[in-house]
Image (cartoon, rainbow, N blue to C red; front, side, top):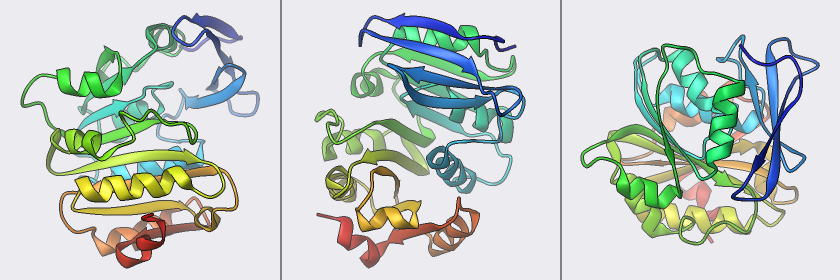
Length: 260
């Protein structure tokens, strides 16, 4: 079970401190902060309930990637507090998952303080996301690859590029889905560059976010989804209906405005 009070761990790679403390408003939930900034939220009592809006949007995409309840293979590039890994286990029991995290101390800290359900099948890999992708066993393919390491406009160049997305696509099973969370500033410079880069690597790309984010006036998160065939039009209406509201999906010519 999770701890009842605040716990702290020093992260040697970044020189920051990570803390995990109970959420005062949600029973059974915990907040992971790094360097004083909230980074992840985990509801141990109900892992199928995701608090952060951008993670809920990713969860909705995962829901559409395979029939309801069917186990999948998932690769998480950027582990955080393993919120999405917990969600997939709760909604798709029997799934096989891999999580790549640069900070060994962070992953150890999270697993110690907020252990996964015993039946979870999760393989952990310590290292750079691109290096780890190349070093996974040959032939290992995933139904979803989730990239969640872009926290601002200064994204790592060796990952925020078409070549990386092509390498990620090579790890997708047929009809597999590439999901990328892009946190950006007003103007959406990073979002625009990543839409263009993903379009060169994937057959189709869509963007999913709070409707006002596409105006580029506020910082926030936009979720990009890359498919290996045409973007299913019904997914746009389904995602918009699921929210969080107000939600909007841009695909096809509607996405051209963000293509740079």
